Length: 236
Length: 379
Image 1 (cartoon, each protein chain N blue to C red):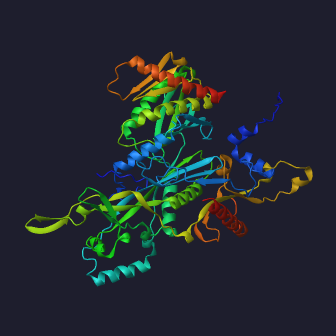
Image 2 (image 1 turned 30 degrees about the horizontal axis):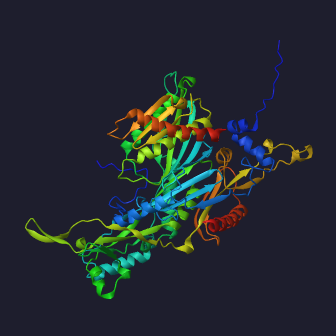
Image 3 (image 1 turned 60 degrees about the vertical axis):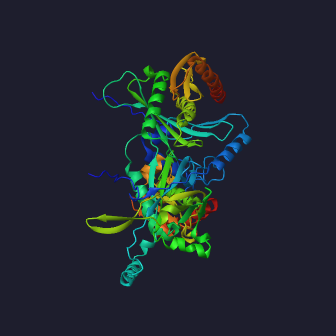
């Protein structure tokens, strides 16, 4: 039986997506130079809340690392809203990740991101406070300029911004969290902290050769503190 | 024996009334000559359109090497915003094996083409997604909007098949390893014969991904306007074949018969060179929507006692339906797609409970031309 999506207009089956020829290496090197030349060395974040009016809370973050990397993330929180079915003493948190424009991540990677973020926020949202409720969080990755379908470092670059964005959306929705959660990244790892870095709520690592984990955590913590300070400043 | 029952009137704040009884809330607003969204009756939402820096051909694009989006638009109307990204594909057209030999066949095709104007037009494959805080399959609204966009664009004649034809180039690798790409319209005469040997045809296929956020009214017009503005930014990358593949034929034998096949190979796109998509500029048009509702005399707030006895229900025309109250209580709606000269491409008129008079339709046509002119100046 042929499986066909009859609900969407997907176009002819035999069409092939555009394939761009590889750019000759000379050009790539030039690009890198341009990037470094323009490098101001300053990371900057733009934060805005209440962009999505029909959600209970939402946030929009633009993260720029001073070079060419740019991550645009929008989060919207729906809930707490009633859950169907049997009684549950805690809120159930669900997180959905979606790429709005480019589609560079595969379903497996998206699932991993969702599971990681759900674990982080289950630890941070005061779920006992919302019995019989569901809190649904939607993350829309609008742009990630350095994303490359062939590289693995994509997820690590966007995760801290995703975490910051969800935190801001939860604050905007007025959902109780035990502390502002934020994260820092180093090489191919991301560590999410709360309580001024005294507690870790999540570790993501794509690095196979981490030798000194305490050093890695310290480095992520330094970045976490900067990120958290930015969030606090916005909320003041 | 009978106990007197006191009836206390319940008073709701406006935002609660809007939720529990949108129709009364709307009527109360109308009697004050305003709307729940605090716009005038014939006032539209402000529209802002840009390309959102999403496409690989955007002026500030950072990721031109890995980006496969060839056209984009970011449309904001009030609080609602629509992100459209257009990607492409290439499809090989099936040509008759002896395409130049059979005169009768060609004549027949020409005859049928004259009667079937639609086959000259092309369209885009849109997928509309509205963010609504739920997961699952597409909703009715998303499916209907996609279908309507697809059909309206096909019938509008904005996009012609000829605009999507690929003029294929040849990539040559010189002996020293340097690579050059030659396109047929850049060719010198003596080199043109390379291309003639290769009588295959391709055409581009366009896909649109339309995402709607903060939906608070009908979305078709917003999606259409966003789609048109995205189409205007589309750059089609030049495509080429590798020289080695262009005239490669392999002789095979199957069941005792020998024939030649061409190896299947991929057509590649030039990462630097591109051509703007040619749209039929004269046919471009933009959409707007209207609603007609009767003013209920009973729901009116009395201005003073003298006016109470005027109980003739009059109806009003509201432009650009917004908010839940308007969308759920207004059943007579018009959706018009036109350009500033009144050249209509699509019109949907749904007669609900309120009578749509010819005067009102005339007024809508006038307003839609004005609106179209306004949007055109912003795209």
